[in-house]
Length: 194
Image (cartoon, rainbow, N blue to C red; front, side):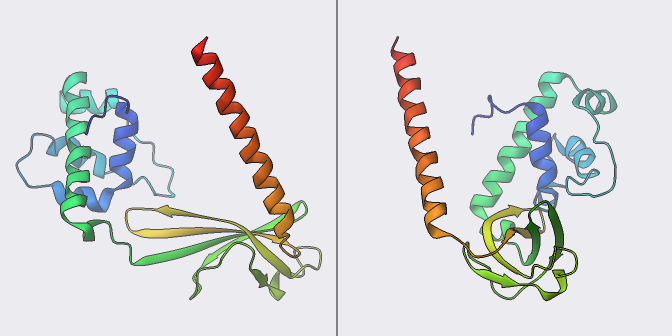
């Protein structure tokens, strides 16, 4: 894979975000192992306030030149992707965590936990225990869902808004966004042909 478009910082953070998977590259006699060992000391998903060293700091600590540093980062990244292709279980996530963002006008509450069935946009939720903190509201609908894959777990972010889901309003909003994107694409193509 050609990583010319990825900066050294992007590569370093990507490798750090795959800490569990990157550990499988250790003790294979690769020249990049000292750099990988340093990167693995810093957990991308840590909630502690631990500053990640800069590329320059890592280069000085390991005594490597900038070109070598970038080349080793690219090798680590490519080896990780190749390992994932050869061993699909490398990127298997058995832990699932749900993070709920519940909003009612300007007030909001967030909680994390686990539920047995993944929610779907438009579905309703009832949270009687949010009644006191959200102006007496306890009925919500799922307005958006997104996923984040960490090195050890899948996080599912669920945005809930008060009231019922309005399919027409959602369709109209998405239609307007689609048409705006179409206009923007046409404009870009026209400008490129000038």
